[in-house]
Image (cartoon, rainbow, N blue to C red; front, top):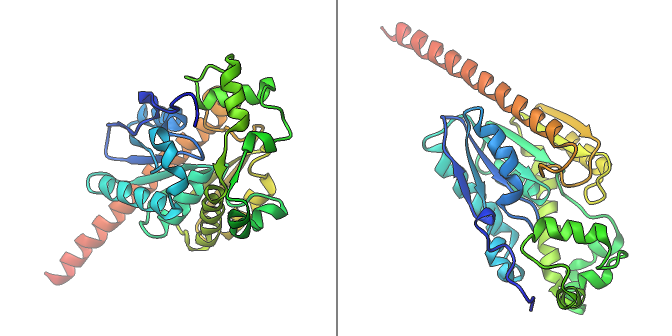
Length: 294
């Protein structure tokens, strides 16, 4: 048990930024919350997009229930949120970061969208142990992730990354550091991550909408070569761009964030233009059909 309750602040909850008819649904990564998607949402909102940042089941204040969650719950939550937005909004843009990109791929083939943005899209973790998770989760039900890391828990860089996710935690407290070092998590939780990544990989060839993929060249979590492989599997038109960045592309503090923001905003603007052209063409076809009938 942790000596604190993480992700309880209002910034970690679902959010909606109402604006015009175009709408974007933004899906966070693992083990994130809508907080990480807020900077991109605000950039789109400034340009007239209604934006919703969704909190996936088992994340945020529900983090203690995460070991009992299944990846299909995340997909269904995204599908339901898309359906709610589609009632009053068009075009519809789906934006996913890391694991959220894998969830978005699986949702997009069941609930079609007009555009898809994949940021550092997770679909695999390299290494032989990862492939053995279906077996390991039965042999070794629980592990201590901070014990397994090559980096010590009190390394300043690791502490900075933890602080990004858990700003409410006092990482200067020796007791907190000691508890984190001994903190255990179920191995089955990582197997759900493996499964959603594989599901995203399998969904990619069925995606036909325009897709923007952004990847950091210095990303040690999602390797650029793996993202290039994923991009080649998508059937629809793909724009792919690599920026000098690590995995946290969506954080406003990332040096590459202005490039990421501008690329997403430009893609969204093109999507509106294409949507308007399609509406005009459909309107013209309808008028021609009426003329033929008359």
